[in-house]
Image 1 (tube, one colour):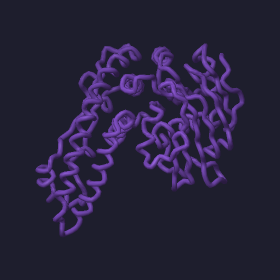
Image 2 (cartoon, helix red, strand yellow):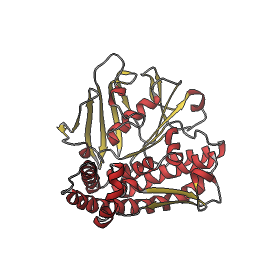
Image 3 (cartoon, helix red, strand yellow):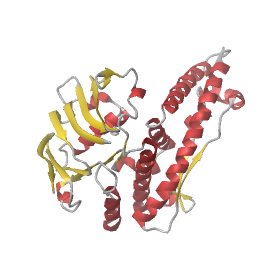
Image 4 (cartoon, helix red, strand yellow):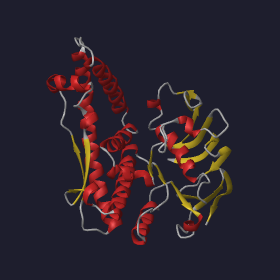
Length: 354
């Protein structure tokens, strides 16, 4: 697919800015604090319906304003399309080709894409929730049924948690049945996705790191059928929430059989993250049958020069790429790229070939 234009209105630093993109590498450069990451954030908002920097949509509104809008024109499967996202910080409205999306689930998959940021270190160093979220968004872009089961499971779990705190829980088995049915599908699809990502990321890691270490991903689930939920009730009543199910499962990342968060060096961890993100892109490309968007914020941060160079080689083959860099680094990156220079939320120079 190809993202042609994006228009930002009162989004972060941007008052009203239209940007046009080319195929291949789109290098977004400028000094720190000029809106480079915010531009990627806007694109990602249309990919996923959320920011990769904040959970509050009000944070996305330009200071002094009461709402923002992000609109894009793109080509997917040879068809010109448009998607628009409007929000006042609390309420949101999404249009696809002028037609309102009734739920956020309808938006997922319209513009398939992957983002890699310096904050991705949480995928290794952080808790399991971030790793589960990685799998969930990856699957949500290609499988509407997965989105249905995630939403169904979450609603059922909330009802079950409510009943766990009540003396009368006669209807709890109804919600447990729903959790078991949807949870089974969630765990199955996460497991299959993990297998595919593990296979792709192993070879990518070997290329980037030139490391003899073997990268592997493994999905660990304890499962949760209706019998397990029934057995767990007594203990769960004490804490007031569900302790078993896919919301407690884990994605294990290992290097040579040892958990990366405990044994991998900083450089190895950054290489692992890059390998996983590029593996996401490759698996998405296979599933949607065309290249998804790739967004990279601050290419090669924390990587040495050799690993950074190999990552750049891979990025050059990823279809349409949006990559940020400060001015001091931009001159050392791609020789052939459409360069967009930003200055305080404004386009200083746009899409010029270097």
